[in-house]
Image (cartoon, rainbow, N blue to C red; front, side, top):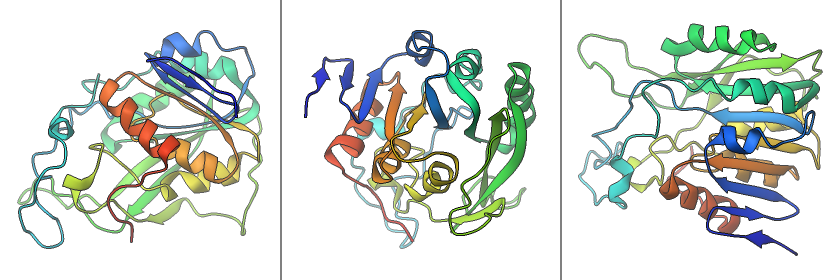
Length: 252
């Protein structure tokens, strides 16, 4: 298989991985050249875990695999929206976009997504197999994440195994110290959207690649993939996940 690689990009017939700001890559894409967008954007909440040196199941302190796990997500002080104009331009008509988003930023993202021309179709709730920490005494334990389902034109779902519900039970990555990204998600979090909103050989785009779970899921289902990340450490994580095929943590 032919491929082209530099320090900042890897291009093959099946996937493209770019170490770059996503706007730089998206601005160069031809209009109507992407079949599906699935992305886990920075949530804009300055998330940084201080609990990942403990196994969540046993409560035992364990060795942290990588010091950089504790660094904050790049540009996580606000949700990114500048990329949405190019996203609308390069996405094919009658196609879909799925964005993972924190509940507190839903309204802000919805305004931005609709502002460039997308139609927000639904709020999809990812019901996690365990709950997070948060304010232990003053709040309810967080057990879900949201996905914004938006379309450009009239998008028809594939209805694989029947009509899907907008609440999806999903596993989580346990044992946080074994994760290679603070917000690493199992492949199954992306698989439903890839199967429902694209077909084999379609191009799936993730402008905020992170751990590379969208890319790995795309290749698993015979889609082509374009992934972008601006963090050299997490770019290498995605490279390991997508190219080498590693998976981390555990799924239930």
